[in-house]
Length: 426
Image (tube, rainbow, N blue to C red; front, top):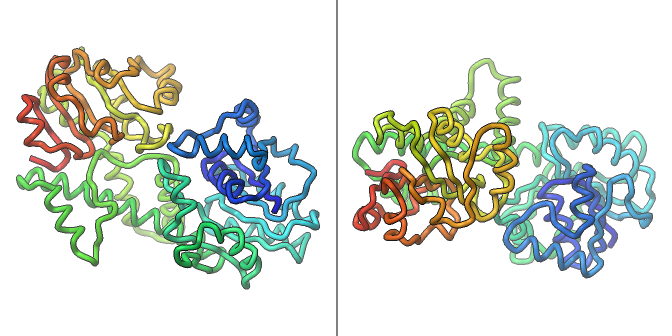
Protein backbone atom coordinates (compact mmCIF):
# COMPACT_ATOMS: atom_id res chain seq x y z
CA UNK A 1 0.00 0.00 0.00
CA UNK A 2 0.96 3.67 -0.26
CA UNK A 3 2.60 5.00 2.93
CA UNK A 4 4.00 8.38 3.90
CA UNK A 5 6.51 8.79 6.74
CA UNK A 6 7.08 12.31 8.07
CA UNK A 7 10.18 13.28 10.02
CA UNK A 8 13.94 13.85 10.06
CA UNK A 9 14.57 11.31 12.82
CA UNK A 10 16.26 7.94 13.01
CA UNK A 11 12.82 6.49 13.71
CA UNK A 12 11.54 7.98 10.43
CA UNK A 13 14.45 6.54 8.44
CA UNK A 14 14.05 3.10 9.99
CA UNK A 15 10.27 3.07 9.53
CA UNK A 16 10.47 4.21 5.90
CA UNK A 17 13.20 1.70 5.06
CA UNK A 18 11.48 -1.22 6.79
CA UNK A 19 8.10 -0.52 5.21
CA UNK A 20 9.64 -0.20 1.75
CA UNK A 21 11.59 -3.42 2.25
CA UNK A 22 8.37 -5.33 2.93
CA UNK A 23 6.80 -4.19 -0.36
CA UNK A 24 5.02 -0.92 0.36
CA UNK A 25 5.42 2.24 -1.72
CA UNK A 26 6.85 4.74 0.75
CA UNK A 27 7.31 8.49 0.57
CA UNK A 28 9.72 9.75 3.22
CA UNK A 29 8.84 13.39 3.80
CA UNK A 30 11.45 15.36 5.73
CA UNK A 31 10.70 18.68 7.41
CA UNK A 32 14.12 20.35 7.38
CA UNK A 33 15.42 21.67 4.02
CA UNK A 34 18.97 20.52 4.89
CA UNK A 35 17.69 16.96 5.33
CA UNK A 36 16.02 17.09 1.91
CA UNK A 37 19.26 18.24 0.29
CA UNK A 38 21.12 15.35 1.91
CA UNK A 39 18.60 12.75 0.80
CA UNK A 40 18.48 14.22 -2.72
CA UNK A 41 22.00 12.92 -3.35
CA UNK A 42 21.04 9.45 -2.15
CA UNK A 43 22.63 9.55 1.30
CA UNK A 44 20.82 8.52 4.50
CA UNK A 45 20.45 10.97 7.37
CA UNK A 46 21.64 8.39 9.90
CA UNK A 47 24.50 5.96 9.60
CA UNK A 48 24.18 2.60 11.32
CA UNK A 49 25.54 -0.81 10.51
CA UNK A 50 23.24 -2.51 7.99
CA UNK A 51 20.74 0.34 7.81
CA UNK A 52 22.81 2.39 5.34
CA UNK A 53 22.88 -0.33 2.69
CA UNK A 54 19.22 -1.27 3.16
CA UNK A 55 18.24 2.37 2.72
CA UNK A 56 20.17 2.60 -0.55
CA UNK A 57 18.64 -0.66 -1.79
CA UNK A 58 15.11 0.65 -1.22
CA UNK A 59 15.93 3.89 -3.03
CA UNK A 60 17.25 1.95 -6.00
CA UNK A 61 14.22 -0.35 -6.00
CA UNK A 62 11.91 2.62 -6.42
CA UNK A 63 9.83 1.67 -3.38
CA UNK A 64 11.27 4.49 -1.26
CA UNK A 65 11.04 8.11 -2.42
CA UNK A 66 12.46 10.96 -0.29
CA UNK A 67 10.72 14.30 -0.60
CA UNK A 68 10.18 17.61 1.20
CA UNK A 69 7.14 17.55 3.47
CA UNK A 70 5.31 20.22 1.51
CA UNK A 71 5.97 18.35 -1.77
CA UNK A 72 4.54 14.91 -0.96
CA UNK A 73 3.68 12.93 -4.16
CA UNK A 74 0.13 13.28 -5.43
CA UNK A 75 -0.63 9.57 -4.82
CA UNK A 76 -2.55 9.62 -1.48
CA UNK A 77 -1.29 7.46 1.36
CA UNK A 78 -3.42 4.87 3.13
CA UNK A 79 -1.25 5.14 6.26
CA UNK A 80 0.71 8.16 7.50
CA UNK A 81 3.49 7.87 10.10
CA UNK A 82 4.48 10.89 12.18
CA UNK A 83 8.09 10.39 13.32
CA UNK A 84 8.92 14.03 13.91
CA UNK A 85 11.52 15.60 16.15
CA UNK A 86 10.63 17.06 19.58
CA UNK A 87 9.49 20.63 19.15
CA UNK A 88 7.77 20.01 15.80
CA UNK A 89 4.26 19.85 17.26
CA UNK A 90 3.05 22.58 14.90
CA UNK A 91 4.15 20.53 11.89
CA UNK A 92 2.36 17.47 13.32
CA UNK A 93 -0.87 19.41 13.74
CA UNK A 94 -0.60 20.77 10.18
CA UNK A 95 -0.12 17.28 8.77
CA UNK A 96 -3.09 15.90 10.76
CA UNK A 97 -5.34 18.67 9.43
CA UNK A 98 -4.20 17.99 5.87
CA UNK A 99 -4.77 14.24 6.14
CA UNK A 100 -8.28 14.75 7.53
CA UNK A 101 -9.33 15.81 4.04
CA UNK A 102 -7.72 12.88 2.20
CA UNK A 103 -10.38 10.25 1.59
CA UNK A 104 -7.86 7.45 0.90
CA UNK A 105 -6.09 7.85 4.25
CA UNK A 106 -7.28 5.37 6.88
CA UNK A 107 -4.87 5.79 9.78
CA UNK A 108 -2.34 8.27 11.19
CA UNK A 109 0.37 6.65 13.32
CA UNK A 110 2.05 8.93 15.85
CA UNK A 111 5.58 7.78 16.70
CA UNK A 112 6.73 11.20 17.92
CA UNK A 113 7.57 11.16 21.62
CA UNK A 114 6.40 14.04 23.75
CA UNK A 115 4.57 14.57 27.02
CA UNK A 116 1.82 12.09 27.85
CA UNK A 117 -1.32 13.29 26.06
CA UNK A 118 0.39 14.33 22.81
CA UNK A 119 -1.50 11.75 20.73
CA UNK A 120 -4.79 12.67 22.37
CA UNK A 121 -4.33 16.31 21.34
CA UNK A 122 -3.69 15.23 17.75
CA UNK A 123 -6.77 13.00 17.87
CA UNK A 124 -8.90 15.92 19.04
CA UNK A 125 -7.71 18.01 16.09
CA UNK A 126 -8.44 15.12 13.74
CA UNK A 127 -11.93 14.47 15.11
CA UNK A 128 -12.89 18.10 14.62
CA UNK A 129 -12.55 17.52 10.87
CA UNK A 130 -12.94 13.78 10.27
CA UNK A 131 -14.97 11.14 12.09
CA UNK A 132 -13.74 8.24 9.94
CA UNK A 133 -9.95 8.57 10.18
CA UNK A 134 -8.17 6.69 13.00
CA UNK A 135 -5.17 7.93 14.95
CA UNK A 136 -2.98 5.50 16.88
CA UNK A 137 0.16 5.79 18.99
CA UNK A 138 3.18 3.63 18.17
CA UNK A 139 5.92 4.78 20.57
CA UNK A 140 9.44 4.38 19.23
CA UNK A 141 11.14 1.46 21.02
CA UNK A 142 14.14 1.15 18.69
CA UNK A 143 17.62 1.01 20.16
CA UNK A 144 20.15 3.28 18.50
CA UNK A 145 23.14 1.44 17.14
CA UNK A 146 20.89 -1.51 16.30
CA UNK A 147 17.82 0.39 15.20
CA UNK A 148 16.73 -1.60 12.15
CA UNK A 149 16.91 -4.98 13.91
CA UNK A 150 15.03 -3.74 16.97
CA UNK A 151 12.29 -2.34 14.71
CA UNK A 152 11.93 -5.40 12.49
CA UNK A 153 12.44 -8.05 15.21
CA UNK A 154 10.92 -6.37 18.28
CA UNK A 155 10.49 -7.90 21.71
CA UNK A 156 7.52 -5.64 22.28
CA UNK A 157 5.27 -3.30 20.29
CA UNK A 158 3.18 -0.74 22.19
CA UNK A 159 0.06 0.13 20.19
CA UNK A 160 -2.23 2.84 21.50
CA UNK A 161 -5.76 2.71 20.08
CA UNK A 162 -8.94 4.33 21.31
CA UNK A 163 -11.81 1.85 21.11
CA UNK A 164 -9.80 -0.40 18.77
CA UNK A 165 -9.90 2.17 15.95
CA UNK A 166 -7.10 1.46 13.49
CA UNK A 167 -5.99 -1.79 15.16
CA UNK A 168 -6.83 -4.08 12.22
CA UNK A 169 -4.84 -2.03 9.70
CA UNK A 170 -1.95 -1.60 12.13
CA UNK A 171 -1.73 -5.34 12.67
CA UNK A 172 -1.48 -5.75 8.90
CA UNK A 173 1.25 -3.12 8.61
CA UNK A 174 3.21 -4.69 11.46
CA UNK A 175 2.59 -8.32 10.41
CA UNK A 176 6.07 -8.81 8.83
CA UNK A 177 7.65 -7.82 12.15
CA UNK A 178 5.28 -9.81 14.38
CA UNK A 179 5.66 -13.40 13.15
CA UNK A 180 7.66 -15.23 15.82
CA UNK A 181 5.02 -14.50 18.42
CA UNK A 182 2.45 -11.80 18.91
CA UNK A 183 4.32 -8.99 20.66
CA UNK A 184 1.71 -6.28 20.04
CA UNK A 185 0.27 -4.89 23.27
CA UNK A 186 -2.90 -2.91 22.64
CA UNK A 187 -3.74 -0.13 25.10
CA UNK A 188 -5.03 3.44 25.15
CA UNK A 189 -3.11 6.31 23.57
CA UNK A 190 -2.12 7.71 26.95
CA UNK A 191 -1.09 4.30 28.30
CA UNK A 192 1.16 3.66 25.28
CA UNK A 193 2.95 6.99 25.69
CA UNK A 194 3.39 6.58 29.43
CA UNK A 195 4.60 2.98 29.04
CA UNK A 196 7.39 4.17 26.73
CA UNK A 197 8.50 6.82 29.21
CA UNK A 198 8.29 4.41 32.14
CA UNK A 199 10.49 1.92 30.29
CA UNK A 200 13.10 4.62 29.73
CA UNK A 201 12.91 5.58 33.38
CA UNK A 202 13.58 2.08 34.72
CA UNK A 203 16.46 1.51 32.30
CA UNK A 204 18.11 4.77 33.34
CA UNK A 205 17.54 3.91 36.99
CA UNK A 206 19.25 0.51 36.65
CA UNK A 207 22.29 2.12 35.01
CA UNK A 208 22.65 4.82 37.66
CA UNK A 209 22.07 2.32 40.46
CA UNK A 210 24.89 0.14 39.15
CA UNK A 211 27.16 3.16 38.90
CA UNK A 212 26.45 3.97 42.54
CA UNK A 213 27.25 0.35 43.44
CA UNK A 214 30.47 0.56 41.40
CA UNK A 215 31.59 3.61 43.37
CA UNK A 216 30.88 1.81 46.63
CA UNK A 217 32.60 -1.38 45.48
CA UNK A 218 35.87 0.46 44.91
CA UNK A 219 35.91 1.69 48.50
CA UNK A 220 35.16 -1.85 49.73
CA UNK A 221 37.77 -3.55 47.57
CA UNK A 222 35.09 -5.50 45.67
CA UNK A 223 35.01 -6.13 41.91
CA UNK A 224 31.68 -4.83 40.64
CA UNK A 225 31.81 -7.22 37.70
CA UNK A 226 31.52 -10.18 40.07
CA UNK A 227 28.62 -8.48 41.81
CA UNK A 228 26.95 -7.73 38.47
CA UNK A 229 27.01 -11.39 37.45
CA UNK A 230 25.57 -12.43 40.81
CA UNK A 231 22.77 -9.88 40.52
CA UNK A 232 21.95 -10.86 36.95
CA UNK A 233 21.63 -14.52 37.92
CA UNK A 234 18.68 -13.67 40.17
CA UNK A 235 15.56 -14.08 37.95
CA UNK A 236 13.86 -11.25 39.81
CA UNK A 237 16.53 -8.88 38.45
CA UNK A 238 17.89 -10.24 35.16
CA UNK A 239 21.05 -9.28 33.31
CA UNK A 240 20.02 -6.29 31.19
CA UNK A 241 21.30 -2.77 31.91
CA UNK A 242 23.47 -3.81 34.85
CA UNK A 243 26.77 -2.70 33.35
CA UNK A 244 28.42 0.16 35.25
CA UNK A 245 30.49 2.62 33.28
CA UNK A 246 30.99 6.28 32.47
CA UNK A 247 27.31 7.15 32.13
CA UNK A 248 24.62 7.05 29.46
CA UNK A 249 23.94 9.66 26.81
CA UNK A 250 22.14 10.09 23.53
CA UNK A 251 19.05 12.09 22.61
CA UNK A 252 16.41 9.44 23.29
CA UNK A 253 16.92 8.02 26.78
CA UNK A 254 17.95 11.30 28.38
CA UNK A 255 15.07 13.21 26.78
CA UNK A 256 12.49 10.59 27.77
CA UNK A 257 13.69 10.59 31.37
CA UNK A 258 13.50 14.39 31.42
CA UNK A 259 9.95 14.26 30.05
CA UNK A 260 8.99 11.78 32.75
CA UNK A 261 10.72 13.87 35.41
CA UNK A 262 8.85 17.00 34.28
CA UNK A 263 5.56 15.11 34.58
CA UNK A 264 6.49 13.98 38.08
CA UNK A 265 7.59 17.47 39.12
CA UNK A 266 4.28 18.97 37.99
CA UNK A 267 2.31 16.49 40.12
CA UNK A 268 4.51 15.86 43.18
CA UNK A 269 5.79 18.22 45.86
CA UNK A 270 8.84 16.12 46.75
CA UNK A 271 11.84 15.48 44.43
CA UNK A 272 11.57 12.04 42.87
CA UNK A 273 13.95 9.18 42.28
CA UNK A 274 14.52 10.14 38.65
CA UNK A 275 16.00 13.49 39.65
CA UNK A 276 18.73 11.62 41.51
CA UNK A 277 19.13 9.21 38.60
CA UNK A 278 19.98 12.06 36.24
CA UNK A 279 22.24 13.71 38.81
CA UNK A 280 24.13 10.44 39.30
CA UNK A 281 24.50 10.02 35.56
CA UNK A 282 25.94 13.50 35.04
CA UNK A 283 28.44 12.88 37.83
CA UNK A 284 29.35 9.51 36.37
CA UNK A 285 30.31 11.05 33.04
CA UNK A 286 33.38 12.52 34.74
CA UNK A 287 34.48 9.34 36.53
CA UNK A 288 37.39 8.73 34.13
CA UNK A 289 38.54 12.33 34.42
CA UNK A 290 38.59 12.00 38.21
CA UNK A 291 40.67 8.82 37.98
CA UNK A 292 43.07 10.58 35.60
CA UNK A 293 43.31 13.57 37.95
CA UNK A 294 43.97 11.37 40.98
CA UNK A 295 46.58 9.27 39.20
CA UNK A 296 48.65 12.36 38.42
CA UNK A 297 47.73 14.06 41.74
CA UNK A 298 46.28 17.04 39.92
CA UNK A 299 49.40 17.75 37.84
CA UNK A 300 47.68 17.31 34.48
CA UNK A 301 48.20 20.59 32.62
CA UNK A 302 50.05 20.00 29.35
CA UNK A 303 49.47 16.26 29.38
CA UNK A 304 47.78 14.38 26.55
CA UNK A 305 44.78 12.07 26.81
CA UNK A 306 43.61 9.79 24.01
CA UNK A 307 39.94 8.83 23.80
CA UNK A 308 38.66 5.68 22.15
CA UNK A 309 35.06 6.40 21.26
CA UNK A 310 32.99 9.58 21.12
CA UNK A 311 29.56 8.34 20.00
CA UNK A 312 27.12 7.94 22.88
CA UNK A 313 26.92 4.21 22.13
CA UNK A 314 28.41 1.75 19.61
CA UNK A 315 26.79 1.52 16.20
CA UNK A 316 25.83 5.18 15.82
CA UNK A 317 27.54 8.34 14.61
CA UNK A 318 25.72 10.60 17.05
CA UNK A 319 27.39 12.43 19.94
CA UNK A 320 24.26 14.00 21.41
CA UNK A 321 24.68 14.25 25.18
CA UNK A 322 27.50 11.68 24.97
CA UNK A 323 29.73 11.08 28.02
CA UNK A 324 32.76 11.88 25.85
CA UNK A 325 31.67 15.51 25.59
CA UNK A 326 31.75 16.09 29.32
CA UNK A 327 35.11 14.31 29.61
CA UNK A 328 36.58 16.50 26.88
CA UNK A 329 35.29 19.68 28.50
CA UNK A 330 36.81 18.67 31.85
CA UNK A 331 40.15 17.92 30.19
CA UNK A 332 40.14 21.22 28.28
CA UNK A 333 39.43 23.10 31.52
CA UNK A 334 42.67 21.68 32.99
CA UNK A 335 44.83 22.44 29.96
CA UNK A 336 45.01 18.83 28.78
CA UNK A 337 45.52 18.02 25.10
CA UNK A 338 42.86 15.70 23.72
CA UNK A 339 43.01 13.28 20.79
CA UNK A 340 40.03 11.16 19.73
CA UNK A 341 39.37 8.11 17.58
CA UNK A 342 35.88 6.88 16.68
CA UNK A 343 34.76 4.71 13.74
CA UNK A 344 31.76 6.92 12.88
CA UNK A 345 31.40 9.96 15.13
CA UNK A 346 34.39 12.16 14.26
CA UNK A 347 32.45 14.49 11.90
CA UNK A 348 29.79 15.09 14.55
CA UNK A 349 32.43 15.59 17.22
CA UNK A 350 34.30 18.05 15.04
CA UNK A 351 31.12 20.07 14.54
CA UNK A 352 30.45 20.09 18.30
CA UNK A 353 34.04 21.14 19.14
CA UNK A 354 34.09 24.02 16.65
CA UNK A 355 34.55 27.19 18.68
CA UNK A 356 34.87 25.32 21.96
CA UNK A 357 38.43 23.99 21.91
CA UNK A 358 41.09 22.07 20.01
CA UNK A 359 40.81 18.35 19.27
CA UNK A 360 43.15 16.05 17.43
CA UNK A 361 40.86 13.76 15.43
CA UNK A 362 42.63 10.59 14.34
CA UNK A 363 41.61 7.96 11.79
CA UNK A 364 43.95 5.35 13.31
CA UNK A 365 43.24 3.94 16.76
CA UNK A 366 46.96 3.56 17.60
CA UNK A 367 48.07 6.89 16.17
CA UNK A 368 45.64 8.63 18.53
CA UNK A 369 47.52 7.14 21.51
CA UNK A 370 50.97 8.33 20.40
CA UNK A 371 52.71 10.14 23.31
CA UNK A 372 49.50 9.95 25.38
CA UNK A 373 49.65 10.03 29.17
CA UNK A 374 46.39 8.10 29.39
CA UNK A 375 44.01 6.22 27.13
CA UNK A 376 40.30 6.44 28.04
CA UNK A 377 37.90 3.86 26.64
CA UNK A 378 34.58 5.76 26.38
CA UNK A 379 32.53 3.85 23.77
CA UNK A 380 32.92 0.08 23.49
CA UNK A 381 33.15 -0.27 19.70
CA UNK A 382 34.19 -3.79 18.66
CA UNK A 383 37.60 -2.71 17.21
CA UNK A 384 38.60 -1.64 20.74
CA UNK A 385 37.91 -4.97 22.44
CA UNK A 386 41.16 -6.78 21.57
CA UNK A 387 43.89 -4.20 20.96
CA UNK A 388 47.59 -4.83 20.46
CA UNK A 389 48.70 -4.05 24.03
CA UNK A 390 52.40 -4.17 23.21
CA UNK A 391 51.92 -1.65 20.45
CA UNK A 392 49.94 0.62 22.75
CA UNK A 393 52.58 0.48 25.44
CA UNK A 394 55.27 1.30 22.87
CA UNK A 395 53.51 4.45 21.58
CA UNK A 396 52.15 5.84 24.88
CA UNK A 397 54.22 8.09 27.10
CA UNK A 398 52.47 6.78 30.24
CA UNK A 399 50.74 3.40 29.84
CA UNK A 400 47.61 4.29 31.82
CA UNK A 401 44.43 2.57 30.60
CA UNK A 402 41.14 3.95 31.95
CA UNK A 403 38.41 1.52 30.98
CA UNK A 404 35.08 3.32 31.09
CA UNK A 405 33.07 0.24 30.07
CA UNK A 406 34.88 -2.55 31.95
CA UNK A 407 35.47 -4.54 28.77
CA UNK A 408 39.06 -5.57 29.54
CA UNK A 409 40.53 -8.20 31.87
CA UNK A 410 42.44 -6.17 34.48
CA UNK A 411 44.97 -8.93 35.23
CA UNK A 412 45.73 -9.51 31.56
CA UNK A 413 46.21 -5.81 30.79
CA UNK A 414 48.50 -5.38 33.79
CA UNK A 415 50.49 -8.44 32.73
CA UNK A 416 51.25 -6.61 29.48
CA UNK A 417 53.02 -3.91 31.47
CA UNK A 418 50.23 -1.32 31.47
CA UNK A 419 48.41 0.37 34.34
CA UNK A 420 44.70 -0.53 34.39
CA UNK A 421 41.77 1.17 36.12
CA UNK A 422 38.13 0.32 35.46
CA UNK A 423 34.86 1.45 37.00
CA UNK A 424 34.22 -0.30 40.31
CA UNK A 425 37.13 -2.67 39.89
CA UNK A 426 40.28 -3.04 41.97
